[in-house]
Image 1 (cartoon, rainbow, N blue to C red):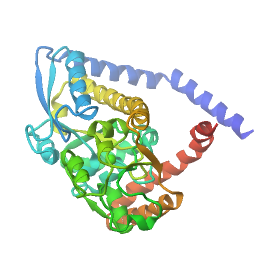
Image 2 (spheres, helix red, strand yellow):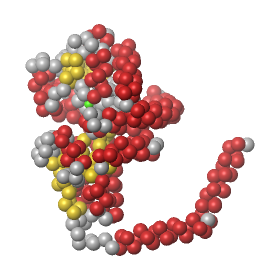
Image 3 (cartoon, rainbow, N blue to C red):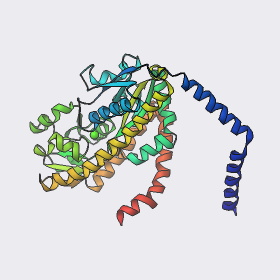
Image 4 (cartoon, rainbow, N blue to C red):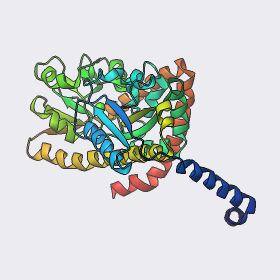
Amino acid sequence: MKKKSNRRKFINKSLVTLSGASLLTSCISNVDEKESKDININFNKKYNWKMVTTWAPNMPVLGEGCNLFSDWVRKMSGGRLNIKVYGGGELIPSLESFDAVSNGAIEMGSGASYYWAGKIPSGQFFSSVPFGMNSKQMNSWIISGGGYKYYREIYEPFNLIPFVGGNTSMQMGGWFNKEILSIEDLNGLKMRIPGFGGKVLSKAGGTAVTVAGGEIYTNLERGVIDATEWIGPYHDYLMGFYQVAKYYYYPGWHEPGGVLEMIVNKDKFQLLPSDLQEIVKKGIESLNIWMQCEFDSKNSLYLNKLINEENVKLKMFPKDVLMSFKEKSNEVVSEMIEKDPKSKKIFEAYEKFRVSFRDWSVVSDKIYYEL
Ligand code: CA
């Protein structure tokens, strides 16, 4: 009975919306207003922007995607908006891109929110949380589940508009030169693992070290580190880690869906005419889809290549090791939100969405994959 009345309410509401004369008039006047503003666009005016990235120049998928984005924007705008893309270090050091875009010296940047954890700790909830949401869930939360409201709010004081600008998809656990049979095997292990994951490793008695992307291979080869995580089969293959590590572990509990980020200087964005603003937004949305598809499709090919052609020993972390990681991850997040009220507020929204999505995933994706 209740269901029926809800359905009726929905139908009635829809009809009211369709027939509401005053509402219709206001819609028309809004359209008029918008169109008249658009008519004043100077279609001869060209905008030249710069994009700084935290990726090595032309890095597969990540840098490559930024180049593609720039190309799409140029074509969609008929050459009115030109965005020159710079790899990390080409114009400014990678990690200075946040400040450069914030103060308007550069119009936009590509990176990941956890790089700015020192400035915006709560931003980490918009990259990846150990045992948190995967890429599909993150997209759903940020884009349609209210996440953008919080994301925009925490970047506002920096005069930045953040966008979901890509996703690495589910990552791998990493490359190890030592077999992990129990949580004790993590004791004394030196691993390149950033962010939340690194803190979890430290709680397990290991040492999380920071190593620049270009130096990981040599450090692993020389035994300076015992293990490293990176992204997934495709990128890891390109990095050549299979040549210097014995075991390839899964799953990537620490980064179940690494969201990548595009930041745009708010003033510069507002100076663009409305059509170019829309082109920037739609270009970033397309980039988000493209990156995820690119990672997923290539990861499936390269996982097989690593196993069948390079004889990589693929191993799953033992269940009790994963459970221990999970416990420690909860501790790391609890300690973090205790210190920062904004992080607490955002994590509560994140958790609420995650739990409700989990119920949906159990009767949709999970059961389907098990068939
Ligand atoms: Ca990673």
